[in-house]
Structures are given as C-alpha cells and as structure tokens.
Image (tube, helix red, strand yellow):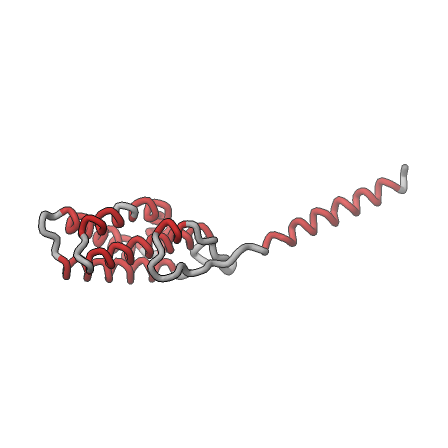
Length: 152
C-alpha cells in the first residue's frame, strides 16, 4: 500500500499537467464570405489573441458582428432600401452593448465618436426622407472607428 500512494500522486500530477497544457488549442477566426448575413457572422468561431491583447476571443466575434451590421446597413442604404437598412442597424446595439465598456476604457474619444455616429445613423434612418449620401458617409466613418478599436 505504501508503494501505491507515490504512484497515485505522480499520476494525478501528470494528469493535471496534461489537462493544463491543452488550454491553448482554440479555433481561429474565419472571415465570413462576402454577402453573408449577420447571423452567419455571429456563428463564426472566436479568434485567439496574444496574451495581453485588448480583444478577447469573444470580443473579437462581437466586433465582427458590429462590422457586419455596419456593412449590411451600408449596402442597404446604397441600394436605397432604407427599411432593410433600419432593420439591419437595429442589431447594432446588441453587439455594441457587449463591447462598449472595453472600447470606452481603451479609447474614450473613439467611444464617443461611435456613440455619436450610431445616434446620427439611427436618427437618419428614422427620417421620413433619409439622406442617402449623409448616411453612407456616417456608416463609413462608423466602420472605420469600429475597425480601429477592434484591433488588439
């Protein structure tokens, strides 16, 4: 029985070490194909980031979702389909609420710009006669800002 205890201890430590070493095998992000819907983007596996990076795997997926919403909204605006654009942009807050605190901490200026542009776009889409060039420009700026804070 005395010989069995050290073997059991070594086996337990070895097992814990092996389990701990397996933590780094996570899936990498894949960019959605052009024309994919936002629901396709939300299902994309999360990307791994280097230690100390600002974006976590889950946050990377949220940023991809934000970028997808902005892109889909801009496509609809440029096509003149403001009903579809409004429907797409209604999804913005769902993704934004999950990352906004991190963006605010990382870059308060960009956070304010994103908030202001989102409000401007939302108001523009609710207008009785939406201004296509103004909305398209605002969506371009919003996309640039979201992309800049999405980078680790």
